[in-house]
Length: 241
Length: 373
Image (cartoon, rainbow over all chains, first blue to last red; front, side):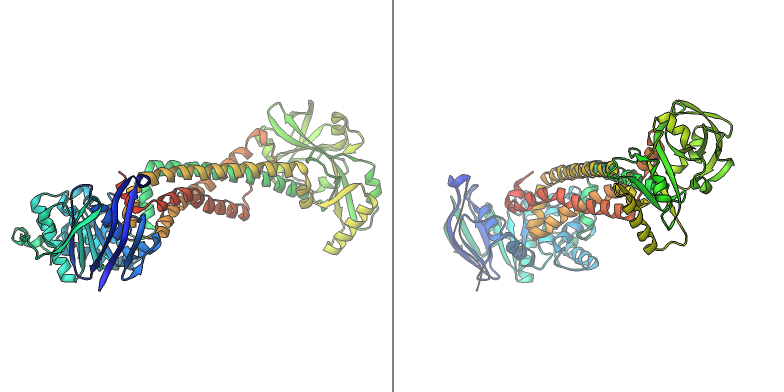
């Protein structure tokens, strides 16, 4: 059963002069791992933003669980209850600690300050940052920040994890650690994973690969995962549980 | 961390800006409280000041502009003194004058034989007699301020008076008053046949029906004049009403300015934190929750400013009332209704000022907000 459906979705900017996504139709099923690939400017991040409701299509229709989602409030609810998003630039709030950055996603979803705090700490432990919960983003490395962002994305036990270039700001070793973490979490929680990347190795972690060129889907193939996991590089204390 | 502590932390991240904004609100609220309190205090002090020597009713010129501007012929006393239920009637001539070229004070002329003298509680000396055309009894505060004792001279209305007594009063108006014999003051003011008003004392015991009946009889006997109790008299003075109107208008303007200060601060805060607001939207915060957070920040700033402003207003009222210009007419007065009015204003202006920045923040698509640096 499809979880996310895009029907003839188009997104233009600058009064229609720039076409970022052009008449894209696709479906993503529960439990799939999907990589959206393509060169820079191909519209893959815009497509992901549309799938998360962070941006609105100029034309077309996006459905979640076969229901059309329209309006900021409805999308906010979908993001709060069903989606977890990870960004290339981490998108952590600088004034908050790692634990608070995770907790902030639960305000309004999980009642009780103590419950939220416990869950945030538990998630940070799961991503190997149990001892960094009181650190602010500027005190963490890039890989650690991205793990905080992943913990935040998991805060409300989402059905779908969306990641926009999750390793784009990381070195190769950290990239593998993050991808291993994401795919392990995906398997452990049976979530759907949709990630945008221009890196074929990162894309290799996903079974389904959709290639975008100039806003158009030029290929949509299912392949066995190719990337070699480098779990051995992960120190035991930092590995996902 | 919750919906309340997050706005507090947001404000704390820019302590100087938040403090200055709160200070701006405090100045506005303080100004509003001080102006409104002092103008209401003026009415209050006139009401209580006239009542203190024992008057129940006041006969005055209709639509008198101010406390001092009324003019009533002395001859009216004969017309009303025989009305059943009236115990005593006394003419009173009021003016504001400069004492010893130093302080503005209210001077009040009473006839030698006025019943009003009977209620003056002397701390020292005596009340003037017919031999003291230019004798004066000073209220305790003005006597202390001018450092006058019984036997000292004091210049009032360009006339040297001799202090014959110092009296203790409860109201600020009377604490700062100079009580003089009516005849001498009439001469000095060139108003031999008129007084400012008549203060009427009714026979005891008082009951509302009797008071109403006597008022009706006086009104019937003097249809061209206004008969009122002391509170109504104070309320009916057009000058006080105009001051109230001016104070209310200025109050509204300063409150509007406070709302603009908050709007400016919140606009800066929102534009600086556009990306953060995008992050909150991305993690599932509904637009209304983001809106509420920004409104809460506006509310917290204005609440902090409002509480500080109440204190500032009270201090200002006291300082102004103690100046020589105040002439004992400006009494600090902070009725609960004024506190409620100030706090309600604060509860409105904070969110009102933050509303536009907040609506800007939630209208922006999260993807665009996230691109902002």
